[in-house]
Length: 232
Image (cartoon, rainbow, N blue to C red; front, side, top):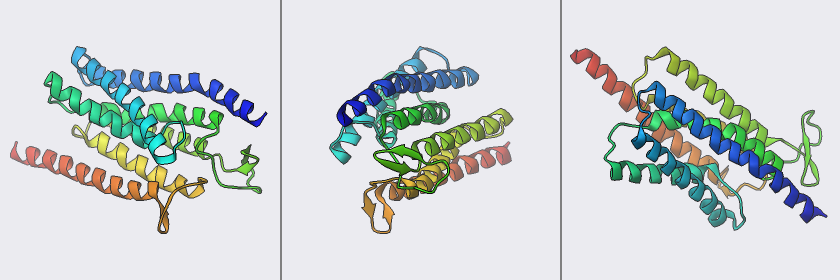
């Protein structure tokens, strides 16, 4: 019965994952139109990112855990590699990072709901927590929903910043990356079964490295913008 229940959960979760990818593509294209980049070349880059993300999400999950499923870190890595290869193939030089900065949290906000339905990425025991959910035989932190809420907050922050129109290209990508790393680092404290690397988890170590990389990127693009303004 337990196996059947798990199977049914994943059957229900599957179309929600499809909605997540569809939402990510829709938001990507919305940003492409706002930036005047909605053409065939950008469409090909988007599709490459989608396919690469799907492959990476599944492959990294299997390699890391030996179990089927998806991991957003693998999806980001796979999508990034596919996008870079496609951009070289079509000769595209303009950055698409800001487009993906919106697409990733939009997809994750829905995708984590699918994780909640499917029962993966579940939280630690929390028998006294008022909003605990019963999953895997006990009351636990709904970490999937924590991550979904964090992605929505990230999307809101990026939207406000983009509407102001004062940031240079790639700055939103850098800010979105930093917000993602902070969100995942915090929620990781409440997730069950995480692979440890000393006092922190492997995912948290990746978040620390990722935050530093995105912070350096933000400083670089911001400095470049100031230098251009001074030169003008």
